[in-house]
Length: 330
Image (cartoon, rainbow, N blue to C red; front, top):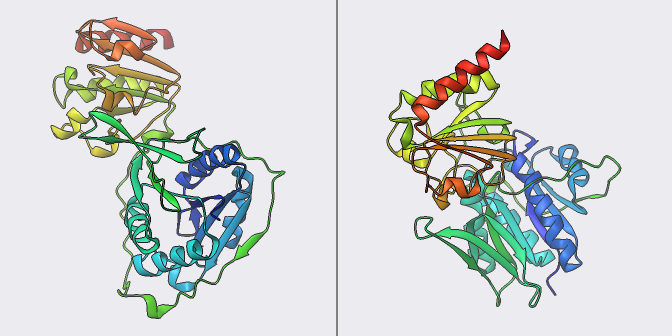
């Protein structure tokens, strides 16, 4: 009989990634509803000490596959290891982060264990009647939200976008036993040879970590509008972000995009300047603590979720707001 909620806890360079803690937090909720346990799975080389930290964030059990061939991600040995664990343990649910690694690994594992996979989920919940997993994700270009179920096969599998779920607060009192699992992986499983790993030194900003975001949409007028937003963000000690429209227009880098096809953020303050507030964008920022919207259109959907709404031209209002903040500092 299938049991327990498993999380693929992604690591890179021996460091457990933030998305793993987020997924364990959600898995804790799902497992409690089912009366089951949360099991974190970590694949790597010399990773046991880092894996033990997962107990503090909600894991009941941790399974480690420790082998030199798993030090750097490679599809075949990782897929073989996950397949071996799922076959031996028969989990009820397995969730992965919708990262570059998770998106490569999860579909291959689902094919091997002959089950379905729902990709890029933004919501997971248990159906109180059937106790099955409801997996919700954007569909048809983000115009609708589709809830998908997998009633006839186990495990139920999903990938979840980073930043969507919230990690639990660390509880140092929590501990457990790490199970070292022999998945039978070796160099013979490598169908490619990693000759060199070249790390990108480009400086990027993780907007999901920002406490204050000043975000721009088409209403800022052009790429130069982000200079105006950056000046305000600097005064507030925050970062700039963007709607998809600006990214598609080439006004700003994609790593600044908020929304269903970008990043999910939960800052203390989110200022939406010239953003209409379509459902695709709202899904990525509606859980912000305080939302201030500035838009010329008084019927823009953004005002439905904003805590404070200002009807007006953001290109005129933002500079005045920045100037007022500068005066306060004097």
